[in-house]
Structures are given as C-alpha cells and as structure tokens.
Length: 175
Image (cartoon, rainbow, N blue to C red; front, side):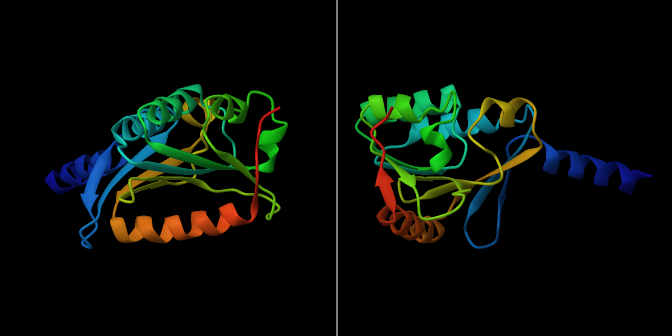
C-alpha cells in the first residue's frame, strides 16, 4: 500500500503544471498540460525573460497574452520574428495583424501545405514546443502539451530549421 501511495504521488507530480527535470544531457525540461495547465503563462513568463532574440513558428496564433508578450519583448529591444501558417492571413482573430502593426517582422510559410509548428526559440538557449497552439482554446479547452527545454545545442538546431523556413516564406505586411 505504501508503494502505491508513493507511486501515486510521483505520478501526480509528473502530471502537475511546471514539472521540471534534468534529462541527463544537462538540459532542464519543464512540462505543462492543458486545459488550464499554465501553458500560456509559461510562454508569457519565458517571453518576459527574453533578453536578445525570440523566433516563433506558429500554426494557429490567436492568443492575446502571447501576442502582447511578444510586443512587449520587441519594445524592450528583443529581436522578435515570426513565421506563421498561411491560414493566419485570413483567420478571424489571428494575432498576425497585431504583431505586424507592432513592428514585428512576420512571414507566412507558403512552402508547406500546413505549417503546423508550434515553436519559440529564446536567446539561443531555450526551445518551447509541443502540441500547444498559441490560442485561448488550447489553454482552456483542448488536451495539449508544452515543453520548455533549456538546451543551447537543441536551440541551435531549431534556429537552423527556423532560418530554412524563413527563406521559403513570404513577408506578411498585414491586412
């Protein structure tokens, strides 16, 4: 019975918001789940701590808190850039126009049928990824996951991919 209790406590800890671990490679990993698991707050917190660069790839992007945090980072002098799926050109409530009007360089990935990435790369140190779309529905209603991985080597690989995608994308100037 005691072992079942300990196992239950460990499992509950893993499934709780903000679980952090060391993967053994020197990477620290935080994990979040939705609905109501703090995914949006984790992203906003990370963006608030960004000092130099933020690269974003997003499929669905309607989250006002994330868009505002990107704009605040941009105003602080952080080099913020986005690549979005082409549906953001016409999607109602897309935050694409908001960030463009804030002066943030934004591209539309036209090379792929669906640009289904959900990625943020911060300061060449941290990768945020998972199934979590940058939307209110993902935070409040969907079963989603989010990983915050502090690993410069991984961030470098994601940055290289981001740059490849940017070359295949078209600048977005807003509607």
